[in-house]
Image (tube, rainbow, N blue to C red; front, side, top):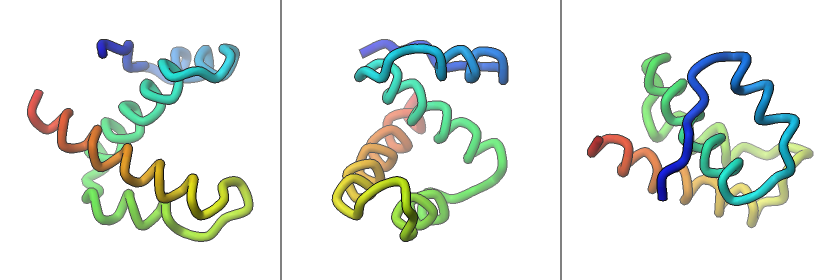
Length: 79
């Protein structure tokens, strides 16, 4: 898969205007990984944030998202 990763705040805002689909989710995850790394966060810190209890996502979806982030983190580390 080859998804465009937003590289500016304007492109991130533009993503919000699109319907949610696989490409949008993949781009958001890739951007999360890129931003987290640029802030010096570890994979463990990022997954802990995702898995933290919140009112937006139920636990199974947070777990799925955490696993997707781990895969993206590993993949993007190889690039």
